[in-house]
Length: 427
Image (cartoon, rainbow, N blue to C red; front, side):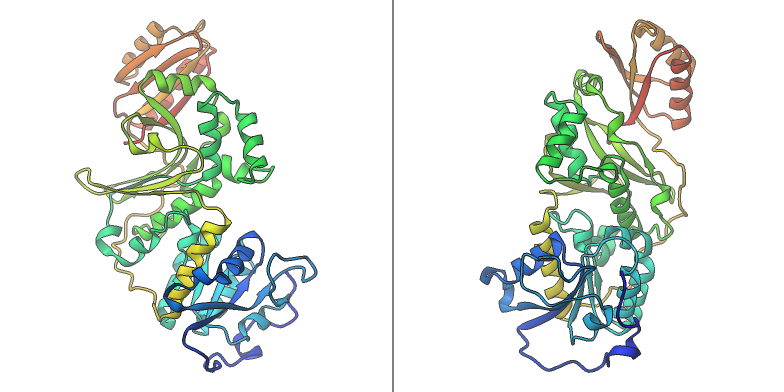
């Protein structure tokens, strides 16, 4: 995005001086004014949105094209300097991506301006550095809207040491992939489900970030960092596309008393995390099994099996805007970045897979019978809890085993001309 002024606090404003005004009014500057940005403006203008008698007004918004129509009146600019020099109390980032958002956000924090962002890519890739900068300058850097905005809980991890000290994270973090899998469970094909999701505005026609797992992997990375894995990166996460599913997986999961959901998993084991994003087998009794459509959820599991679950609607523009405004009001009230109390866990886990119970689907039963599979699993030291079959395939729920054992077993099956898919079982 071209800028008409150099980005640097000494070149366009005096950060220590801001105009005096009514304490009930909070002035924001925005990076971006797309669907979410316009929803922020619309909600800020509602009488019932003035929680605690605080009025939020936008000084100006940074955009690529000032001539593009917007859904709410706002001063538009192509200059980052104009936004940061407008005497704002809080900077709101709804731009998306990494640059120029990272540079502008860093400049604002360095100048002592609190920042609220919905940018999951920015936080996943540069969150630790930006949090450290905010802490050094005594201001807040909040991103509740970056991870499942409809279920605001990130503050629990960022400010509460006991809540952050979890032994595992699991969640349904992407509304689009959940909608597609739910539709498949109701009988739709993957293509039909995706077309419907596009029609309803849940995703763009190119939905690879959603279905391929990148969106959920970024959100999971943020959560891992907040739980002490400071070196966690998106590249550490093993992503499996929802596009690998077919109707036989849905049927097989049902035969094994479960269902298939798009799940993010990050169990911590002796300081080492194995992170997974993609389809997973969810037992019928698990609370994720009862969720459908665009619902999202996050479960934090502690030693001994104790779990705390946050669940709610998927994040649309209006839901995201409400969460952003809550963060704005809290930031303007003087909240600062909390000290980093989280115990540091071991390093990243590039290429690692979740090693526990697995759901295995074997297609082409004419090539591999249930008896064949039972024999091979025994020979390969892969014990199983249940094994069922129908005309479409053979389905297995294994006992806890290393991923390497599952990989060997599926390789043997594929060598016999059958198709195989292995998915983790959500604990």
